[in-house]
Image (tube, rainbow, N blue to C red):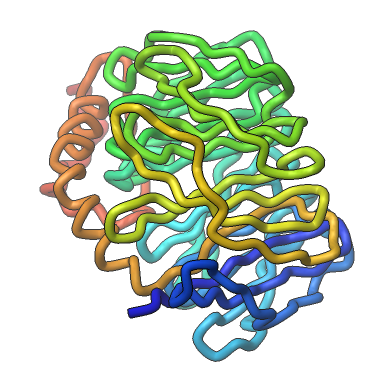
Length: 356
């Protein structure tokens, strides 16, 4: 049975492209499904949930597109500057911008639940922990910040002495990576200590965890490299495009992983990759030319939401424990404020001004 699947890409030309993928044949084909020209400047970020695709732009807006009805769903106005990053988690969307803010939105009524002054400079990237209780952000103030999402307060600030432009949790949340120019630095979540570094030949534009240890890395060239972050080495590389690769994403089929790449050359390509001990170069499943200069990429695959949730549930046991422990440790001191994301743990007693 064919998977329901759409490739969604943003472009310098202000247009969001959606392509419905036919997975029935040996060679996958993509058919133009929609174009959304709601922005007045180039698109800088895109994210997909089960129902919506959201895009952020240099025009300072976040545009909503209803994937079920295939219609515009409105615009979110809260940031003053370019929208740099977008990420869904459960019934919430997090957005980061050049104004230094992280905004938390409800995806039910699209209210802005919380505005966090996250960085003194731009917010360049953010990532939500699999448990939903923590988030990481990096910015142009040379800091890496950990946020407690149950109350929206800063949990931990680390001075990394350089401006990072990407941060990502691993799939089960026991580690995370921070990217500065052409270097990937791997951190242990529990200790916040560096466990390894990997240097890419070119400046890195996008990364994506395929497994808990294999990271796909795209940079300012035509090659995609697969890195084992535990062994601190590249284990596979292949030429993906004719010009630099701007974005990578992935999703899982029954017995293999599909790596999706988007490039300045206008192509979106899908690659079949068997995640086994000895990684071999992936084979091309299909491609589509948008004829635009692509900037960002997301995969909309509603049929996989349940499957991913089930997989995440088993991983969440460890990630939940890690998150809870982090919130208890001395290095994470948290004052109770207002609950943003649903916290299913037992409610904590609020401290009164009684000196205790």
